[in-house]
Picture: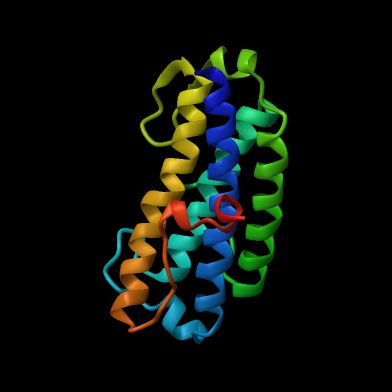
Length: 169
């Protein structure tokens, strides 16, 4: 079962890269004004939603990989400029993928204690749960993005995990 978690996280890391490439390619075709327009999503705009996903990835990667955490205001945008957001997104995707390759059964079973930046409560949970959360958080907010892109009449292709190219080679 544990080996399955290692394979599962590897698949989710590849899926994250694939989906971000697709979503960012579509968003590249939009003007800055459209990307930053408040469309009523939880974080308002496409840009802020993408920025929030990056925020979450950086926060969890710092905690889980580095054992650190840089407190940030969850409501403050990390990158106002599209090119800076896009550049860091793909750097962090590579970092996540490289980190996932270092995971072991022992690291997945270890208990990780952290203080939530959202509610300021301390929690201790198995590291594998937090890794699942990292990927679930991305997928949750990308679902919001695909809704916004659909409202704009834009096509982004399949978002289904079984269509991940690496699974179909």
